[in-house]
Each structure stands twice: as C-alpha cells, then as structure tokens.
Image 1 (cartoon, rainbow, N blue to C red):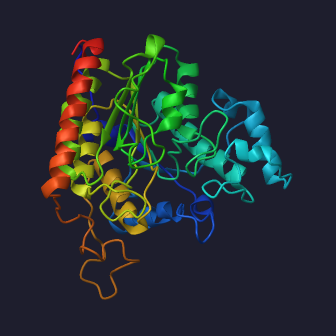
Image 2: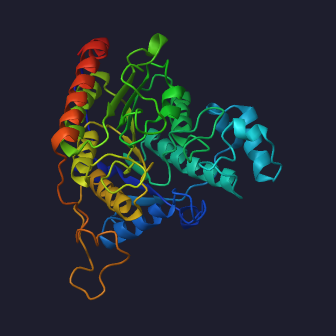
Length: 391
C-alpha cells in the first residue's frame, strides 16, 4: 500500500486555489416556493470576504463559462439534452415529464439549461486547472448536481456536472484514479450510475438512509457491478444521527479506503443539508463534524475539487461552506468587522454569534438505533468491500 500524499499548507499556498463564482449564476431564481436557492453561494462569497478568506495571494476567482455542447454527452444522452433545449424554447411536451423535466422538483425555467451548462463549465474548468497542475484546490459552491442521470432530471439537478468533470478528467488521462466522496444528506444516485462498473473511480457516499429520504436508494448492498464491484461504497445512516454517529462511520470507513485506493485526484460533494436545522432532511449534525470530515479529506487528497451540493438552511449552509474553504486553504477565519456597530452582514452567524456551531448530541432510543445501525453497516462494508481493496 503506497503512502498517500495529501495537501499541505505549503503546497496549496505555493501552487494556488480556485473559488468558482459568478454573481449572475448565484442569483438565478428557481421560484419563490422552490427550496433550491443558488444565492447560498453569494452568501458564502460574502462571508469569505468578511472573514479574510478570499483575497490571499495564492487564491483566484474563476468565473464559469458554458461548456462546449459536445462535452455534455460525456454523460447525458442526446435525446434528453434535446428535450431540455426544446423545453427552454417553450416547446413543451408530455414526454418531458417521463424524463423528469417539468416536475415540481425540476420545473421548466427560462434559462435553466444555459445556467446548468455554465455551472458545469465552472466544475469542468476547475478540474482542468487541477489536471494541468495550475492549482491544487478548487471549490465550486454552485456545483454538485449529483442526482441528474444520463436521461433524467432529478432532485433539482438537470445536468450532472460531477459525472461530466470526472469523465473529462479520465478522457484526458485514462489511467487516472479518482475518489468521489459525497457527504450530502441525499444519496448521490446520478454519480453512482455514472461509475457503477468502473474500478478507476471509487465512489463513497455517506447519507441519510433511503428508508426515510429521497432518492430512496443508496443502501450498503449497492456496491458496484462487474469490474466495478466494491468500488461503490454506500454508508446509509439513520434519521436522527448526530456528529458522533457520522464520525463513527466516517473514521472507520473513509480513511482506510482512501489510503488503499491512493487517488490522483479527489472530488468531494460537500452538501450541508446534514445540518440539524435543514428543513428537508432528518439528520442532526453540526458543522463541528462537518469540519472534522473535511480536514480528513484534505489530508488525504493530492488534488481536491470540492462542490456545494445540498443545503436548504441558507445561512447555516453559507457558514459551512465558508469553513470548508478556510480548511482547504489552511487559514483561520478572521472577522474583520468584529466589534463594529452593525457588524452582522446578513445573519449567517446570528444563531450562535460565530461561524461555529454549538455542539449537539442525540439521545435515547433515536441515538441507540442510529448507532446500532451505523455499526451494522460498518461491519457489512468491512466484511464485503474492504477485502476487495486489500484491507
């Protein structure tokens, strides 16, 4: 087993980091009643500026540009993309619903395809910069659309920027090894589909169990097929799981797999909908475990492409992503407005008075069930998947 060489402060500060951002994309409107709010990335950008996390000499802002038309076909099929184009032009057909276009989750919106292609362009451009060794870290809080399938819009996702970026990296360098780690509360079913039989991409997802949350899949028994058997690792955790439960499965499963697989690049979907206040999920995490996990991912990533993903408590999500960016860059947040009258910019810290959450722990029957299930899932993975990796 080769020793994994992770990111260091010296390396990142020398080679550089990229923050993918566009005001135009951040203020795209999915509708008043739609839970998906791209403005989370704008709030993250503002917080990063406030906390002196954006204008360090090694950092660059990368403005997303639309990907070339042929690149979308690295994952999505032509019929589906044609349907998206027709929907944008107002040529609405019942057939679109069969592909998830026009549902309440994925409404037909003016400009949605162009918006999705630009977000994807940001993710692909960031991956290219890592591949070309022009940076070691990149973060696209606008990206992370892990539910979109090759022919299906799902879960607020129309174009799967993750699958396309990973496939483009493989197209450029066919012997590259990629770890995809997903800590969003929702299982990344679209990314799983993309690499289910591919042993060069290790897909790890820790998420709320499909027994209680969309997309109702992602069980530990889903572990890949053919040459890819054992290279899909699903870690479902129970509703009510807290920081202790999450870190129990993370610490026992993720580091050994990273070290055995020894990736060339890591792609991390850092959804913040696992937080206790998220309105769409049932987990009880705080950003204490979130930071802990990200630090361990950074320590084991030779190059890291991080993406936003879920998070429907806007302010808490902005705090999580601000902390994630600080960890990737090995710097501590510094509140430049501390002590000033009117220092609160827009409220992300109002709940606790800082970027950091107070600790929280579940208890009683909920905690006992969550820990028992976590132990059962961990034991299954250690028995069925670890031996495939020589662990």
